[in-house]
Image (cartoon, rainbow, N blue to C red; front, side):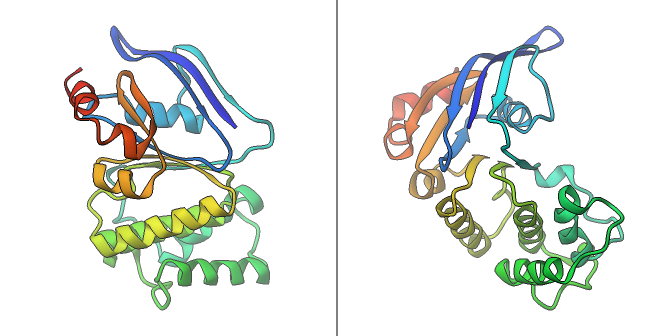
Length: 226
């Protein structure tokens, strides 16, 4: 579905070196590594937001991508309602100015219920807790109907019940045939919930089943001190 063969420089700094990765349809992969390892840069390339300075990112024809950036890149004080933020998920299909059909409205109501935000659709996003805001973003993500979901630290600063609910959603989406790539810092969550992991520190340190590589202390040490 998605293949990368690339390196990337920011000025004179080599941020990513000799990255060769393939993500198959229906796979669920965690990207793990220390701060400054190039994880977010790699995700932006997967999402098509950033082009590598060397190499290629190849996406199978007809595949739709959706990208969820980190919490701190989003303005939670903008005066907009929960309903309107979730409805942004329809933009790829209907554009900015077309009205929602009744089918769209029904799907939006389902998205609200799916993430546990029924009754909050008219609330401004500024009143939401961190966990509620992330639920909101997952609802918008679902409405985009993308085949490939690319998530940057979706469980950062989110409470445990919300994390478990969102992980359950992701696992259901995998069963529906979606492909998911996520940056995650919580190694126990990755080991328990995410089948495949990639240890990254500017280059790929290891890749494979999470239950194997995340129990390998030598590999973890190498990734975090490389």
